[in-house]
Length: 214
Image (tube, rainbow, N blue to C red; front, side):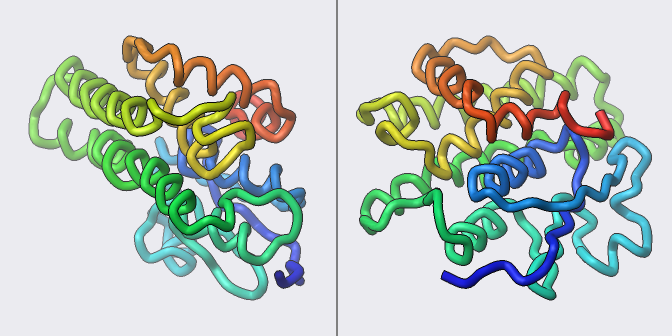
């Protein structure tokens, strides 16, 4: 593994669950970083300066090792591959694939259809606020239900065994979003995993309410 050669800068927003994931990963890996905040409600992620870093105009972005990384899943895996210490993914190829699949249920199929960009488009199409909220609630409910069934046969305190993995890093922020939109948290297994994770310092420090821009 390589050593990080620069002081990382994390571009994010306190309530962004994608940024939340990266904060957890950085904390677990023991990487110190500097925050730069972009208020999503004010559209600061679409400023010319930020678009020069990330043409998608999405957060997070991580300036690290002389490069700019985007997409939370890619950032987390980069950290796992380049920073020694706590491992987010195991060595076993089958286990790695299972954990990646669980993380992608949230990263690819749940969060993208209920994030701010999509909700704003729904509002622009004339949907009432109650309909927009219901859209988000349903998307989260379906995603978490699939996630719950995907890990149903797994033992241990966390999603996959007795050690935190990438799956836990993606689950906990999505549960934060679920509460924001009033989703019925009807999954005892997921709630138990969340409770154990939130007892860890790396998760506590990454929580939205503990960020300077909250």
